[in-house]
Length: 110
Length: 308
Image (cartoon, rainbow over all chains, first blue to last red):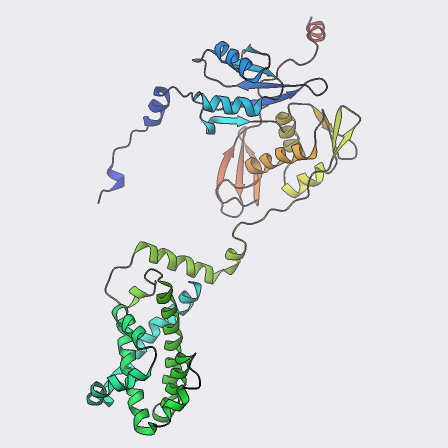
């Protein structure tokens, strides 16, 4: 029987691991914003800067048939904007493409 | 399974008592039992089951002896009587045995032992029921035997005891947290009213400001509490949507993250919010409310005019 307390434990194992595999760290916030009338805007904040957001937005626009841009924000970095309520779509797409783990996604809004 | 645990203590006791008693029995007629055992027991229906049990519980063996002993006496007393008694009630052989034993002991020995015997029979019944169901080893098994108890048995035992001691836990395994649904009404075309906002704050024991901050940040809009203590939110929202947001708020800021009890206090401590649970005493920090990135949705020209 092994004694658990005597096992060596690397406290940085998690940190190393997360930087090694290409899934990004930190939460990704998916929000919705109301615009005039029934129009809405979906923002995706917190995607790793290692990703090419322009390419992501290009793929998303094609996939969801909506327009979108990448906005630079001094505090939050690059933020993805998509027209319409694309929260479901973007969550599925991000997890399917393996960019973000499901537990890192945080969906806000109603 | 519950029932078994209820009987467990009696099982233990029984064994102790039985050993004492059995000595008497054994002393009383050591010689007689061996020869008479076979013919008498063929009359009893539960003989095969008894055999099975013998393998598991050495306690049962003793019981068998006892039975034989009673049978012997009975045979001595009233051999012709027993068959007619047993025949009319073929369904409940066990019961009959009980009765016979009772009669027997009232004749021969003190009443205490009769009680013992009844207990034993109940236990035996239970064990038999389990045998028939082919349940894995019953948890009372290792009580008297030398074999090691398994983890599962101990776990089951603990849970049974817990359930027995506080039945409220079983009934309300998941404590329900009931609150009124939010009353959401549209005001005009652009605004939404959350009529029982303060009432909900009270039921949640939270500052209205905190809930307001959360709601506005999550919905990404602006709003305020008006004179009638109702919340006016800019934008069109339905009750279902508000409910979703409220649910998320309760999950994050009301229920304890450890024990999920809603009996908590939210304290602000050095710029951080801490959730202190009144039930389990745990204390953990909760995420601060951030509205995050807000895209420009209004007229850009208007913003430019404002800043310039």
